[in-house]
Image 1 (cartoon, rainbow, N blue to C red):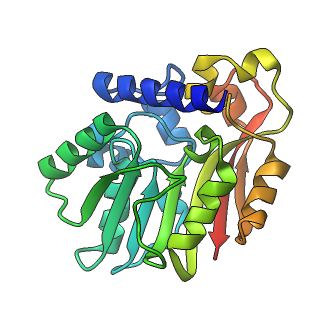
Image 2 (cartoon, rainbow, N blue to C red; image 1 turned 180 degrees about the horizontal axis):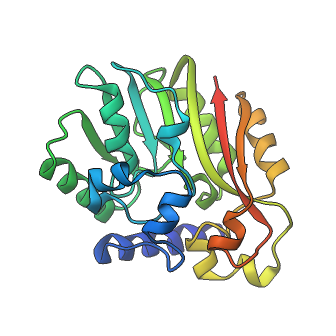
Length: 240
């Protein structure tokens, strides 16, 4: 099923990139409810595809001159918001596994004149990033899509500088899913089918040698986006 999950996710996000819209549960109203301001959403409108479950750039301490990495950067919305914080002396690198998303993000960067943003094709389990080169990692509702979550966190640790930080918004389960839910392709693509229990998620971070602090837990997202499935959006600060 692991290969099937990656195939389902990749095909789904290729389609999203081509059509320019996210899961059926996503829209601008929901984007605002998970932490984006009107100003942020209008910054690069084409980059907001309604795929997140939080706003990691609002959570994160990003400073001028920082090198920032976005895991699963999509059309680039979080990269562009981070780039405003790093300024010209800093840099933001977005990594995504679909060429279609990378191309869309590059088009957005060129259209809106972002010179300090770079997009690289790659997988979050095997990052195309040098060791100890990143000040801040951000990730918005992406790690749940990976079948190898601990590997993602180990890669994060590898690329982070000493005392580097990671800000994550992600979907975690509060109760186990049924077999039918686990195999539902729409739930897999929309960040539920591949999610794991909160306690297991936190343990994987610890097993990767990182320290995590819970910043916020959004349980309302279960009602607004996921038809009452027992889950939440977990906001974390993770330290190397």
